[in-house]
Image 1 (cartoon, one colour):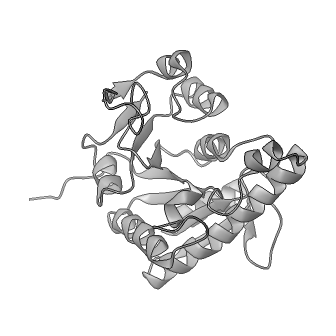
Image 2 (cartoon, rainbow, N blue to C red; image 1 turned 135 degrees about the vertical axis):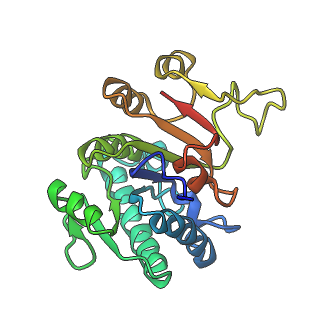
Amino acid sequence: MDSPRPAYDRVLLKLSGESLLGKQSYGINIGAAAHVAREIKDLHALGVQVAVMIGGGNIFRGVRGTGEGMDRASADQMGMMATIINGIALQDALEKAGVPTRHMSALEIRAVAEPFIRRRAIRHLEKGRVVIFTAGLGSPYFTTDTAAALRALEIRARVILKATKVDGVYTADPMLDKTAKRFRTIRYMDVLKRGLKVMDATAISLCKDNDLPIIVFSLRQPGSIRRAVMGQEVGTKVS
């Protein structure tokens, strides 16, 4: 009997920098990076083409720098550099797990990453390489959420998989409100109208205008990424 086929053959996985923290309050935990790499390896083994957009909040978040009086452009540039550090760590973890990987940065830093070129990124995916996108879009004032949505559209991904600390989208913050209810599915417009913190409004609008679904799930539950890609009910689907 044939094995079930994945519901999505090309995906973009959006990771926060915090996914590499482990139990630390700052920086990169090598064990946490290895865990993420194993989860991605499971997808790769299914024949799914995987791109990853990673944030940098475990090292430096541009919004925080702005709040402390930094120029926004300078703070965002520091945040972009933090994502490149995370990209190097994730690439190392993936390659140690035996997964062929390419790191593409929106900022030109050829000693550690290729410059982002859309056709080259697609070719890497077609050749079975996991592609890590860093430095967002290379410009200040754009979040990694918006960068993830745009890159997903550019590479023609079938879905954005957004890994978070909670297992989906809730009516309120489940960490603070024990009565919060999880949505199984929700429409883009309802996310915008309710002001739910799924992704920023620009990213949600990009996905809405191009019919790109988003699946929000918890990275803390092993196998969640695989189940989402196989079409099983995981977290919350925004569509």
